[in-house]
Length: 281
Image (cartoon, rainbow, N blue to C red; front, side):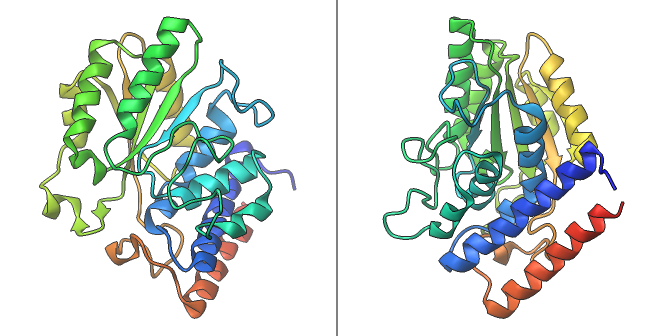
């Protein structure tokens, strides 16, 4: 039976999750919780939204993506491999000594990575610079930047937000992976972070809130952001940390640790079941 575009994107997101779990398990380290929460976002961006060509990874007119929450490379690498930027076999080298697939993305070593990130809070500044550059060069590219909700406790995020608003960067779209958790627990307990939508609106952003695991809602939000003029956009995507793996969901302890063999087998079994069910919709 032929599946719809929405169903195909769901399958891609699930493939990204399976690959992310495999990478972290094989490496015995990595950040799995936030990788699982942002997989649907990456699937929609890379397979439905962005103007990109894996055969021309450095094309001037391409859209840019900045993974500001740079520790969630398992999901990004899985996405890039699935898109065709490099062979999937390379995913087995994740976090290995001398591997190009480091724990944080390196734009000089990995095709398809537009910005080297890792220090939280800095990616949005780079994305703002890219968006300004595109305006100056009249390149016409869109810039997408994925940040974590814990990450936006960093002051540099809001300095970048002010610059984006001042320069009316309607070619910039920020996505907040709002899973509610960071390494030390709930975001509201760590720094009292609430009212994210209102905060961005006060900084001059066009702000939307969506279910970050609803493919159709994500597409609609990205389309709305693309057509908004004279101001940057932010999509607050409400997600679940560890999405798709029952014992990882909504557990801050899975921010940055690897599953053991039994946990790995259970996680893959659950994710594969999700994939098979999605095929019969």
